Image 1: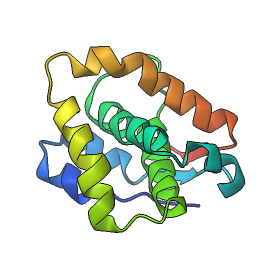
Image 2 (image 1 turned 90 degrees about the vertical axis):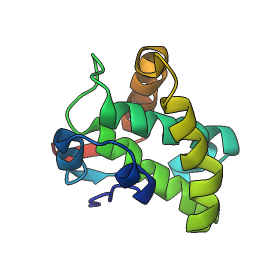
Image 3 (image 1 turned 45 degrees about the vertical axis):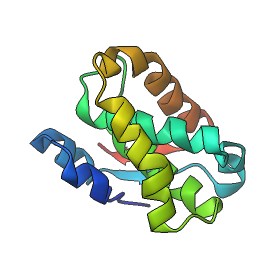
Image 4 (image 1 turned 90 degrees about the horizontal axis):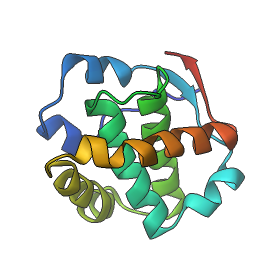
Length: 130
């Protein structure tokens, strides 16, 4: 069971109180061997952005706890890739924050965010307490 922490970079962005509450959701990330295919530059970029969208946007079709599942899984993928915290923020969180800050990002990335959450569930991830 994992309680994902909010990324430091997210704390620096404008977060709402509901987003903070989501970070305390109990989740189980997919098993490491099932996360390995996501341990690519593209895979982690997608999860980093999906985390921001799921946490900060009202996205129809996301289930309670999906933001935490995406965040926790992104953390596990970063570990699999052997990234330092600095490299993770610089190469993944920073660019995701830039993309998130563009006009219409919530709507443009909604489908990919829903797909990311569904993929993590299909790989064995689950929300234990939303």
